[in-house]
Image 1 (cartoon, rainbow, N blue to C red):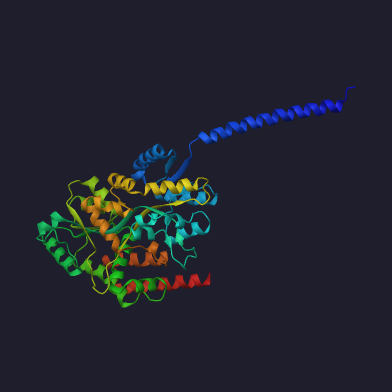
Image 2 (cartoon, rainbow, N blue to C red):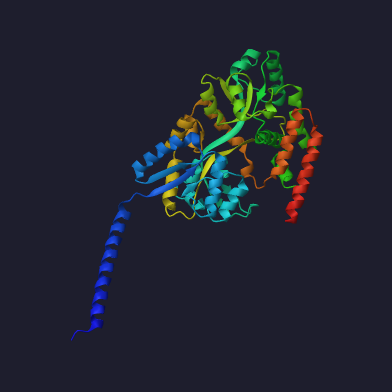
Length: 443
């Protein structure tokens, strides 16, 4: 006797078996592909001048480790920053990425859970990873215990290269003015004396891109550290010391003195740094205030430029001269990456001596790995020696309000143009500071 229910049951079992078999076969095929498919570590960056070098290193790593490294360039930096922030909101960040912005921006990414804490990895094994780096380069990626950003103690980024900002001097121009080219000015008085000799020969003194106010902020803070010391500078940022303090007046007065002594190149207040670099590279100014990245820039503009590196000439012997410096660029590991450990292993490889030496040779940037410093060209070594004197706002446990920075840097431009006095700039800056502090307290 034929039972219709039995037929339906047998048909159902047959179909189920076919589906099971199909799924099993697909699953086996997928697993097989998964085992043979190369793992990919995706990296986003903004460094257009280093892209070719990164692509070459990616090929080398894939050949050595069997892991494909996919570097994707997004430039300029503003476009990159927008992409990173948008991707964070949609949780689509790559395995490795950089964060462009002040330390509070970095902290916000960490607190949102997008950045992996690398402290344990940095301290692993006897040859600790963190010992490779210039301490000031690593400091940009560290957060201390009890920091004001509310980030847990740890290391959250890997410096890829290092940088600092100093002064450069044209040896040929100094010699033509009668100054010993092997002994550049070390003090403020010597600097003014050298400039007087240059002026008599019709040679411009200092050039820098002070149309970009961050460069004014940099030199002003250098002299603030030298005149009043680190504690007082940080107390000013924290609101404990006013900008009308006599030591801040001394800092602003230096720019007035450079104006009165005709130290500055014509048009420096509105000049972008690229124009300033062209003037110095073409022997049209004896001194430049610029960063270590300029080595590559000057080389491209004038391979025969005969220059050296010097610390900004000190005003006071009471406190050390401090320069801005640290990590030129850093990479962070995405906490949500499915290949997080592979990403970490690649960054260890990238910051090893061989790869860092390759990057120095290709890009003329300072290495983050201090072991490479002794094999660099002389001018690179001169910049690297400044890392012992480096600091940077991104490494401070305090951040000045952007409106305050803009007020006093624009004020310094006005001092140079003879439109305002140091006292006026100090008073205006303090007024903005008090307004911003009040707003912060009312939030």
